[in-house]
Length: 80
View 1 (cartoon, one colour):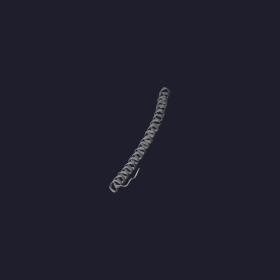
View 2 (cartoon, one colour):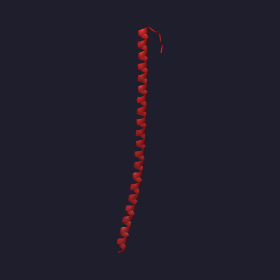
View 3 (cartoon, rainbow, N blue to C red):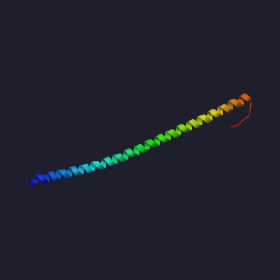
View 4 (spheres, one colour):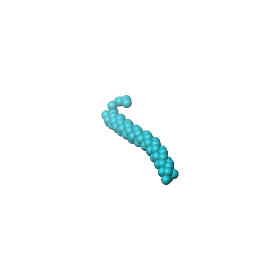
């Protein structure tokens, strides 16, 4: 009977250690997931900033083209 109880206690100790190790592994995985999520957010923000920059450049180029057409139409000398 005592031997059986000792055996059960040993199994409980082993399971307890395994659960603790598993919790530790899960915490590490969650840290990695958080890092990846933050990188994804940074990438999304960078992508949005790049899109805004391209829009601004496109608007500026369009504005320059309009000025070019206007100056050629009216033969006005402008330098940009």
